[in-house]
Length: 140
Image (cartoon, rainbow, N blue to C red):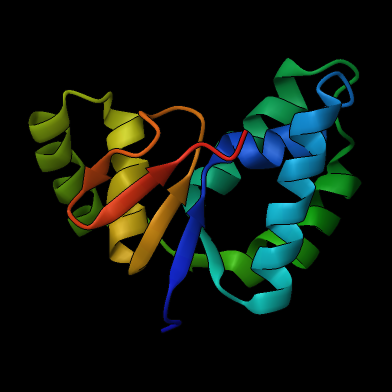
C-alpha cells in the first residue's frame, strides 16, 4: 500500500476531457499526471464506472468504446486501488449518517479512507473539511 495517497474523485477525470472548462481541464490533467507519475494518487471502481457513464452517455459526442478501453488500461487500472466491497458500502452508510452526504458521495469518502488517503480532491464537497483524518480539497 502506498503512503501519503490522495484520492481523485470522478469530476477530476471528467474535467480532464472537457474542452469547455480549460482552467479546470489543465488542473485536472496536472493532478492525473501527478497521480500516475508519483504513484500516490488512487481511485476506486466507483470512479471508473461514473466516468464511463458520463463519457459514454452524457457528453456529445460520446467517447468511443475503443477509447474507453484504452483509458481503462493506461490511466484507470494503474490508479485503481479500491474495489468497492460490502465493507466499503457499510462504511459509506455510516459516513452518510455522520455527514448527511448522499450515499454515492459517502462511498467516495469511504473509498478514500479505505485507500489510506490523506486528501480527497473533489469539487463536490466542502473545501477544507476533514472527515476521519481525510482532508477535502477542491483543486479548482
